[in-house]
Image 1 (cartoon, rainbow, N blue to C red):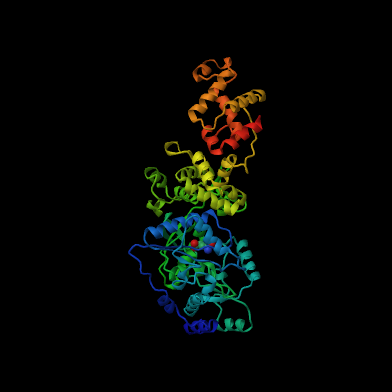
Image 2 (spheres, rainbow, N blue to C red):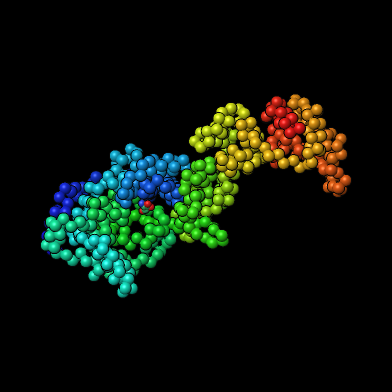
Length: 545
Ligand code: GLU
């Protein structure tokens, strides 16, 4: 086609598109941001499935943008969606919001009035202005190949052991004349628009990835589809236009996108745009029977972020753990600054790992225990109540007596240096505290001594019990009972000659503990009985007798 024919064809293919690339350049001007400010985004497809990888990327993006006084925005990449997934965008926003990730701009926000709209499906006209220009310049062309034609090409390439794809001499529609194109369009043959790649499949260049460093890339040579037959652009094209017009400076994304990077870089060049910096991060892995593999949507429920909300992991715990995977020096920083907010840490892309980080739930649990141990009773109570309101209304009812619930939490968490690290997440905390609430107290009493002995201990204990005794007086009575029944009260003597006794005072105390709480391991038993109140504590012992 001649230059004139290209321009004519562009007008004929897009008669309604008046706005030019220059118009959009002015419409979406440079952002007025301080020197060095980074503009980052997450650009999920609204499938309704929000996973750990999304949060992993979002956390890095958010840190980099906020730290540099830049902008972090949310773009919804819905070009591939046949159907709208109801509630999917809200799910992205609320789920990430739960983990403390908020946006400065983007879908469902006021920012829509500046660099938006942030739904790709609402930007059809914008993309078409750029496609139109590419056609006019001979950089893109209509392709009428059917699915069968493409299968045929692929089959022949396979026979000849060639790389599959629409390129070079295989790109059948590349050299169609203006007349041939016109005839097909007039006959109503559906078409897509493809980019006309300048590559021949041999050129290589080096590319500096913000995470992986220098990598060698083979230049693109495929005439990729940029506009589908329904007039919707492909991801490749739409994201290039958007990242340019929204002035993204850094794109962090999973390394599964690395293979299409050459296409993207060629599109940036064809459109005359300066590409943003790219950082491709490795995917999260898990250890499965000794081998490392990617977390999978099908096999691993823990990939979904909903998993953590349902179990009631504290958002700060998940975030803190992900930070340890994101930046190799984060853990060391945390040890030095145990009480500093996570935002004080200087996040750096250079410290992001190049190989797949191992996601280990046991480590998350450890981090969670520490994070929860640093909450005040009030904070943990508010968190538990919120979780229970959403996921366990019966438990929420038990928590309604705030003073009592706080007493339970204070007791379980311990104070000062004795702060315990027993809580991992809300659902597990419910298990731990269930014995303090009649509504959930369902003991399987596994006593350490024979039933007859237990009965004697419990009866003696009830006979001498005075709820107003302090801890010392209380223990003195337990000791007395132990001694009267021949149990060792001197631990050293017991250790030296254990066979001389039926057991020690701690076995006697354990019998009481099991009777009152159903468990062998609990915080201080006297404090528990005070908390439960006389009636309930004594009642539980009587039930056992
Ligand atoms: N829409 C792509 C996804 O769903 C975004 C990739 C990118 O960040 O460029 O992962």
